[in-house]
Image (tube, rainbow, N blue to C red; front, side, top):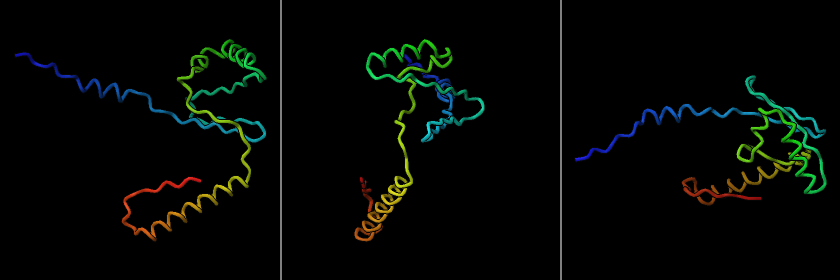
Length: 130
């Protein structure tokens, strides 16, 4: 009779618990172009401006320039697999905020109407999209 070796679950749990806890970093991009990075003291942040280009060839050259001039500790971060967030700079006006509040009020109203006509024991969730 052969015995099946038991897995060492203790070491598996240890390796799972030794994973680093994600640390939050907040980047604020102001409408006037001012950038601010907020994080705990042990986080080191660097803001680097990528050269502006008007062509695909220029973009490739800008990438090469960036890779050549970044300090090594940051160069190791500049890989697609390490990208954690991306967005486009855009202007957010007070009217945009009011539109969002208005849209949320409409959705809450629709939820209220649905509860009224379907009863409070409804097990299905509706997804409203504007």
